[in-house]
Length: 436
Image (cartoon, rainbow, N blue to C red; front, side, top):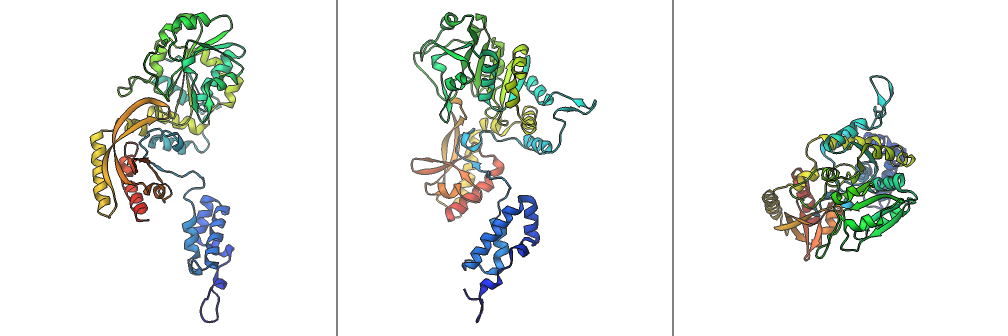
């Protein structure tokens, strides 16, 4: 590598400590950490040593190599057509929830009454907001995810006792985790009743005895069983003399007109459920957490159990949950109710603009789903950009990662879960991927 007559460009490579004093890299070290910046500087120096860049460009190269944040997670555009994609973190938080998280990231009054200066109930305003959204619940509690809510109920109410459950509700909840294994791990015993496709209230009644902890109803949220089927409703089970715990899964707090078959917390409680458990990061559109709603004495038994301490949520989750409950419609709610005609107009406009850059793209009709174990079998009319299949990998690995889906040999970018404000970012990502 020559640096001119008789010279070696490698001798012009600045020292690491000199580069770290450059204002852009000094600022980045304060934002990302010195070790991250130093690694980028050394990579840029290595590129100069091997002749891939001139020594004068080392500073620019190091800046270009820096990540946007100190965390390893990358923000992506969800164009899969699955509103609550588990691999993409399920529900996107609203702007109000994100601001609440930022506000709560420093010292807060999470367990302090500022007026009196004494300890206060943890997360009291978030819990009050949850109670207000579900008036049928006499009390509420929040843990770190939906499975934890069910584990806490089993531990507090059924250790050494039986949980009566229909065979048709012994489900796998994802990633190989099965509900029966989860419940048995608490020290409870399972008493299966009925058959896979038909279970009656009489089946439950015959199994209930002195050793019964509670009856469990589980919504089979990630599949749907049709045909010769029968299930006992909460109203049939409530008079049996033992607590009825209902795991609704998807976190719907009240009935939704687009999801008539999806159970909601308020309806189940009014029907006689003693406790309802649900996830906060699904149809509610909030952060990952588990909701417990129901009778005051039972909720108190759960919230005061020693395990509750291990399952409690942090202040950031409480802040995001409260803002989700009290704030404007969430991205999940907006995507669920998006007008198909508006989606098609967006797809047409984007396709027309991208075609002007020579991109092989067309606007097509599409079918989106709720996902996240919610509303199985429900499809939502949508619109998508159809691109060559080869674009999929380039879109995922580009500066703005875009995740679509492959269908009939094409890469579809479904717009239902893409906020309109992200259309230009999506278009730029497509131009970059197609050009690459």
